[in-house]
Image 1: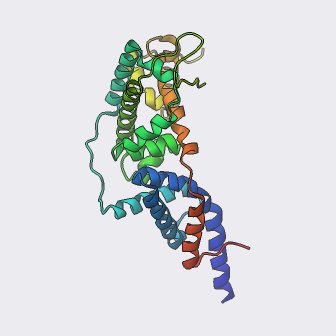
Image 2: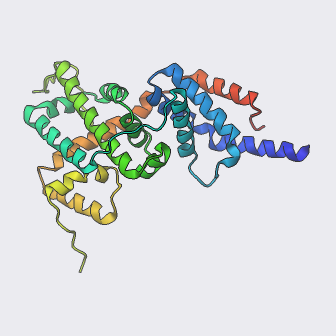
Image 3: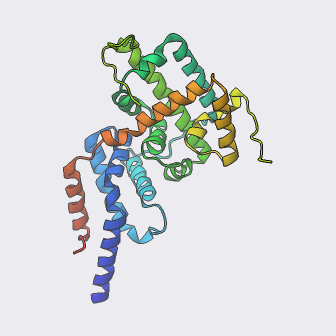
Length: 203
Length: 87
């Protein structure tokens, strides 16, 4: 019937307009969860199929990217036959203080200057991939995908306080990885006008 | 008379440093942490380091690119489910 055809067309138009543009973001999130490009592609496909089939449930006034991330994460958990990930909720404030204490140690032993002289990007990619869940998805959502604590909490299905503690713990673990990276790479702080091996300045 | 911004100690500032950098504090607490950082040479390096860390981490968006063929793969799967692009 003509009316049904119009409904389908409206659905496809809104899906193309609101959901499809986020495919790169969903892929990045899926990759952070699976740590395997092939698995990530499967998760992206499943995410979009589920999103399309349940498009009638999506509130057009809400955040589509957040909705897709939630579907993506659930698809990942199903693929691993995992239930909710339980983790001890640590004190987020204590994590922040501990990170500062460790940074103080980095300043004192010169590691801070080493890190200031290199491109952190590749090392951070490795550090993020090496993080365990549930810290990895918290860092991916907030720090890479620019989600607020509240949004990340909704996507992950946990309280905001849990997001904070997982996020701060994940960041601290990543910063420790950077220290190991700097030392293993045998980096030396830039000194004088010639600089040092592998050093790059970043604004 | 303008409202005075409460002074906080280093422990308080550092415990809220991530929230501050994420802009997740209320306005009053944001000002308190900002005030402390402008006045404290011990805490400012932590903020600078963390800010640099978060900036570099956020740039991962540009480093992890979706394979071009995946879009077509997904659209083909959707087409099998009844999706068709608008004319």
